[in-house]
Amino acid sequence: MIKNERQYKVSKKRAEKFRISLLELDEQAATNGCPKNIHPKIFKAQRDSLYTLQQELIVQLKEYEMLKNGEVQLLHGATLQELPKQLIRARIALGMTQKELAIRLGKKEQQIQRWEDSEYESVSFKKLALIKDALGLRISESIFLPAPEQAKAILFNSLSQIGLSTDFIKRRLLPIELKNQELSEENSVQWAQEAAEFIGWIFNLSADALLGGKPLLISSNSSNEVRYKLPEGRKEDFVNAFTVYASKLASILPPIVSRARPVGSLEPPEVIYNKICNDDGVPCLKKALEYVWGLGVIVLPLGDGGVFHGACFRKFGINIIVLKQKHTSPYESKWLFDLFHELYHAYQHPELDSFAYVENIDNCSHINREEEEAANRFAAEVCLNGKSNILVKACFKEASNEIQFLKNAVQSVAKKFNVSQGLLALQVAYAAKTKYGKKWWGAAFNLQGETDHPLDTTRLVFLSKVDLSKLSNKERSILERALEDE
Image 1 (cartoon, rainbow, N blue to C red):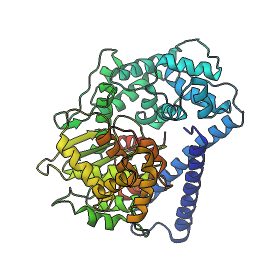
Image 2 (cartoon, one colour):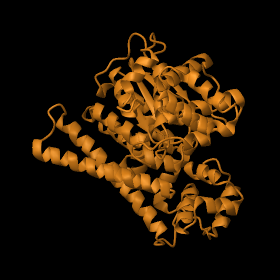
Image 3 (cartoon, helix red, strand yellow):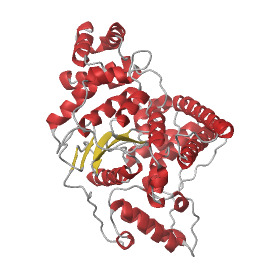
Image 4 (tube, rainbow, N blue to C red):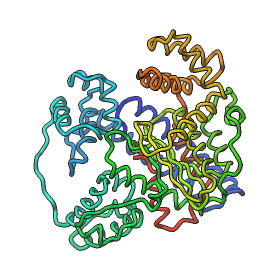
């Protein structure tokens, strides 16, 4: 969902890039046929994936344009879960900026941006009501449950017990044909049975258990191996459910790539740095991804926010890195850091054929702190050519340890040492938090330069490396839904 003008402009550029890429693929196919080194089925799958992404962006752009142009006067929402998105749509339709809403609520603009980026995930119902009033909205209080929806409601209610929202079920779990199927008295029970069987396969639950209306409990099939950091305020049931979901995605990937897990040790950060830099001498996400794939490590991108930012699974002796950021996150430097952070974990514990390491940057528990700090150091050294500590210290020295002078200091040091300003800014922000107890993330993100959308880049590299024709229909369905934009 597009929420502001900046996202609209970025999405418009992405849609145009997809359009051009599709034209180039079609021209190539018409002129020379399918490339010799790519199987026709893989070529078609890549083309179909690009087309799906383009169409999803077109729908989002059209929705935003209709809201901005005043073409929408009434917003329909069938569930309370849809209320946050409808509040965002209402603000856009009213021609109100995030800053103007912030003023009405007595908040800072950045607070509204954070709330809307998470679609008010952590906002209380009382605050949602205040936002509704600030927008001057009237909401109907009618509640009804049509008969054909009863079987679906039982299934969704069962899944809510293990932390899964209706929105997440529709976006990521339901096969597209079930999501789009219109329910009636005749087909609703069959629909619920098929949906329960598919979702039960993901979470190792029977359809009878999901439709029986009894309390449910899931545990990862690798629960003895999973180590994860639990973010403060995050419900453990959803963390566990999403971990099982990500683990399921990881488990279907090894058969569709011809790779083995890395052997030996990681190359020195300076060596890696030189291999992933572009012509300007700064790290490039696409080159970094090609490097990591070349080591035999699968990199799966997910466009969901919350729970964790990165994970590393080992399945059947093959490592799978999961990079997960909100699909609106435009910061390539964050993806680069997370990629090499997880690569460090991929090279640990070579004696194990399977393990899972799931993490979040917030407060943590049940995790090897020493390994985590080593992963942070390794990622920082790769991103800054082995000079991370030197450069961060230089920034604080030039700023005289004053937070208000850090922005100019980062720009100056980055230019002097010919390193990425964005990557250096993130390391300075991390140091400001851990060493000085100061928050500098907002300024660090403002120092990020414009790049191609990192989620798109990572997704396109992934699609170029896998053979989707080796998947079963069930496996292909869950993977394709995972790769969709929200």
